Image (cartoon, rainbow, N blue to C red; front, side, top):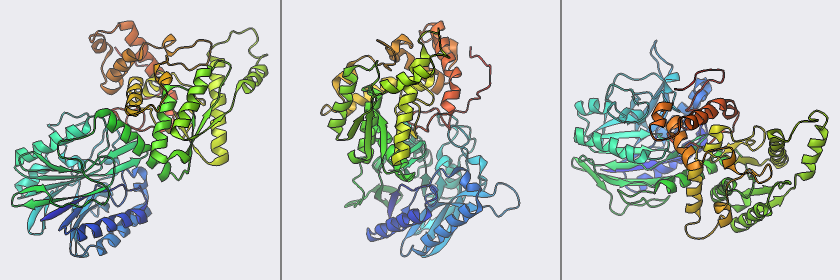
Length: 559
């Protein structure tokens, strides 16, 4: 029996586009001789649809699309993720569902048992969990069809795991010979290895092969990495699809186990070998490129604009945008003030030239002087302070937004996670924009990305990487005038934000108590800024955004 894993990139609510894509992959799988083709979770709808699920016509459109897909399935079986209605008198109105389709008919429907309600997930808001796990016969074999969270059992060491039942075990007890899991599992650093260990554990415990089909693509702040894979009953990866791109991967079910298909054909690329994968920094780089590309395209923008400061953050952001969209889709703008060094302006120009993007120079000295003159009476007798510094950042933000308004370009903000965490950023200034590309990237990782980008040849100027980071909003300013060294700051921030550690626990790691308290105070104090920030691409286990919900008006002090 030949099985195709259809790792696709759906767009939320784009039913015609998603349907065409699914039908195309079904047709290609049929031509490849496949008996079964499997698609990701909610592939008809796109994941996550969020409160669109509360619209009756949205659910209707998804069911109409499934009908169209159903009619295209001839001579092959397909498993497709969609949203179904709950016809019972009790419970939530919808199910997160998978349809087993054969020759124009839905043979069976399978519903998600375990609904994630942690971090970025909120499925209990919309869906009713099923309590009736069933299997389906496909080409004479008994298949257990599960959906994403159904394989994340209570024995897994992953943040938020609270489940106390195992749908996989239930399917195997019913006679399932192979387990299929259709997923929309977002990328985070290190998650691919966790998935493999988790799936291998199921295969070993239950002596069954497992087929895992994951979505790829960017939807809002989430990036889905694909990396679909097949594990034999001994827990060994026998084949896997590529990360971060669409692919059709074929494997064979022989006897009681699976193996890689000989002479496989993949129209969207070649799968990497089992057991191999990208390095951590390469995966992050690919995730940011894919997330940026899909956000820009799925939101309907044609071009982007970036403020180039000559610093490492804007340089890395510009590289990612250019790689994602092409050099003709990125405009760089450098806006020197009285405090900008000649080197920063020159580094911006060099970067733009190396990337092949247009770079405009718009000096802001005269605009800044006009602002300070207008405010001179109000500020009479008061010293230069952060107010005047922020004026410069806000002037730059207004210029970028003016270009956005005039030409319809999307402004990409360039702030990193370390700055956003402690509020080292200016509301309505450098925070202006529609997508915060590196807002979940700690400053130390920004340097790692720069080194990775320059691994073969210099793209980001060496001076940009080597010079001390500075906002250049006052004479001889350096980030470390206001912040601890980034290698210290980032460790404390990770412990507090991503690992939810207390002050005493972080101090026990060897850090000064007053320093730790000061950093945590800054994080808590600047929640109001992050609430107004552009959406950012999530790559860590805990990003600022939908997965971290902190109150603004609160007085709790961590101890």
